[in-house]
Length: 284
Image (cartoon, rainbow, N blue to C red; front, side):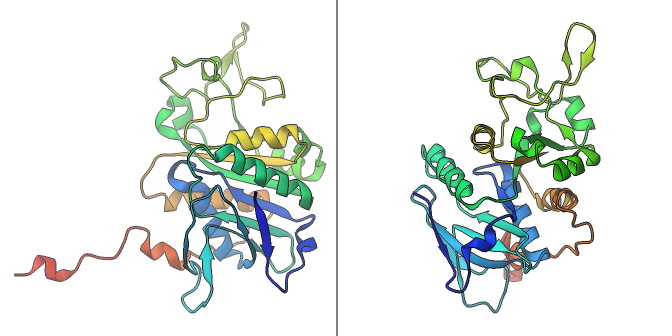
């Protein structure tokens, strides 16, 4: 069971009606987590609590956002800005094998109790399974739950950004196990020429979204549970993904009407690839 522990001086009711941003579990290159790191630092968000979950690998470490801090970071924490309008969950460790469904169910149930204004889910997706259309288009794709479409001001704002909605090819359905190419960016031939596929409805089979981890399952829960959720997936490959996180962060900034953010890299990013090699290794 997911248990929330707020800071002693934090009133949990301040989470209500804020925008929640969180990363997907086990997504490729940890794009969601890197983006959350960048948002926490750049928006100067403060830690307001942490969670205890039996479904995530336990970790503990130094504060990733400050050199002079005396608090220890854990595997899943929540941060908020000064005016309580933006809340962010950071998940720093992978889900334990075969416990992913339990974890996202617990997270979904907790979100339901808070009554957030809307939720933004961030995930990487595997671009190596793509095709020419995907490579040539904007690497950001989105999906929206029906409940989000009822939030007229925000949904209208998202429409105005003209982001690509995820398009599903018939070969990408879960029932088909013979696929060898990720084709979600292909338009569908409806018999009258090619046209973009609509977003998913409750009766549509789930797509294959390689690299998204448990993101789509969480999306399905929010769809069925009437949670207003924007699912933002960024197509990438494993490697140095700092640039990907920066680009996705800029798109998130557009979504939440924060277009003047001064982007600040977290202190912990200095150690993403370890320290420099000792010069003594190259001297006799």
